[in-house]
Image 1 (tube, one colour):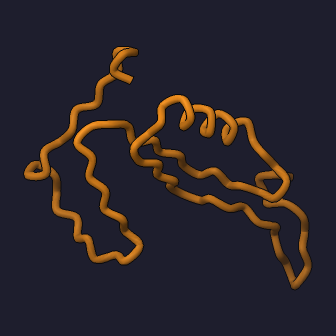
Image 2 (image 1 turned 90 degrees about the vertical axis):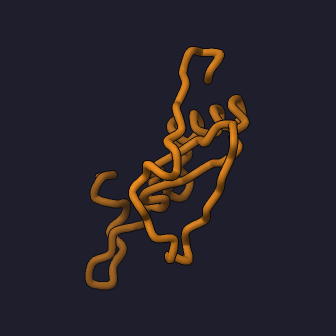
Length: 93
């Protein structure tokens, strides 16, 4: 990204607020230089490859990040009511 004129400054550890590392799902990763690619709220649904997913994969291949982070909701499932599957989620109606 630097060759494109984009640079992110790293905040020193001493200036960050303290966040306890007690969650067993937390993975700590330190890198001295490189790219961290973050995707969020993918809402994957079976048999549906979105344009956003294709763009994320293309960007990952192009940038070759040191770390890839997936935040937020990853899966979208069917909506259930009274034991019946109603189809897609509310957002897909």
